[in-house]
Amino acid sequence: MHLLKFSEWKWSLVLSALFVCAAIFELDAKEQRMTPGRTSTLKKPKLGRTTNKRQRVEMVKPKIKPSAAAQTKTSLTQVLGRGMFKKVGETLSVQTGDTLSLRCRGKPVQWSFPPLVEEDEGRLMIVQQERFSLLTLVNTTVADTGEYTCYPMYCEDRDCRREYNKATKVFIFFPDPRELFIPSSSHYEMIQLRRNWPAVLPCQVTSPEAKVTLHREFPPGEVAVDGTEISFSNRKGFTIHRPRPHHAGVLQCVANLGNLMQSSTKYILIYVNYPMAPPVPVIQASSSSVAVGDNLRVTCAAEGERDVYMEFNWEYPAQQIGRPLYTEETMIPGSGEASRLQFQSVLQVDEVRDVDQGTYTCTAQNIQGAKSVSTTVKVVSKAKDKKLRV
Ligand SMILES: *[C@@H]1O[C@H](CO)[C@@H](O)[C@H](O)[C@H]1NC(C)=O
Image (cartoon, rainbow, N blue to C red; front, top):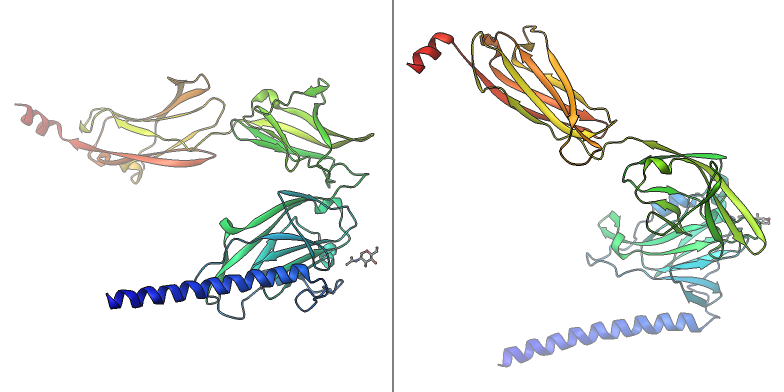
């Protein structure tokens, strides 16, 4: 009884200590938010330094060894001015040319952001402070549009890894009244369409307010975007969810905002016959036991798509002594969908000899992969065979 009470008391002590810690932390956070004059933890980053920021991001190492306990989910705020913060939602718009300042709670943390060309690396700066990491991007352009993510790091000794499930992200638009699409480096972009693999036309807009439509060059016309077969997201572009051959052609996105109308890069969509999966062959010998002098047939079959190349390769016991390979390959309609076929390769062994006894392996291959199957065949002498039958 007494012991139990003591342990209860101990627990309440631990809990209240935790509570006090949490309260101090909260207070501190509030204080930071409410005292704009405080500069010790919110030093204005010195911009224009030419160290390689990206490397620095990768090399963040904790000075103190964090406990094995994982960090909590990060939280992202936009720094609007000295001591002025705004919690970010899913998206954010920052006028091009302005400075983007994001603050993420956690130590250590890592950031990911749209790729910067080398000459632009000087525009980015990341500073790890006591409990926050501050990302600053100056002289922003439409090309900075994209996803900005802050990952807390889980560290054990010196090994740190990103905790993806505790990351916080925000999609940031950098609208420019003259550029409705994020510029592309080329006039044309080739996109492969494969049956049932979603294809994305990455015409990303710089402003969430822009109205975007999809157009076909020939025959000219607007493509219906029903949200199911084809959908649009202002963070991604158009997605063709289950491509079919009729989706192929030259397409272009058109954005409208105010009295401005602009076209994106041209997308050349090419439909390719691509297998859904590696083949799954099945092997079968005409008989698992053959008499010397008889004929043997080993059949290897796999289902595949029409117009998709499938190759069969064989390994057989008499290969080592140079017995030539006789195969016969056929295609017959499959039992299910019309687009599926049954591919078959039959290995013929005429006048079986002792050397033909052993393992027969067939490998079926398409561009997605290869799979092998084997079966064993026993060769028996004719005489012995007769004796057994008597
Ligand atoms: C930002 O733009 C200003 C004005 O064009 C320029 O003087 C400054 O060097 C730029 N800063 C960086 C880091 O590129």
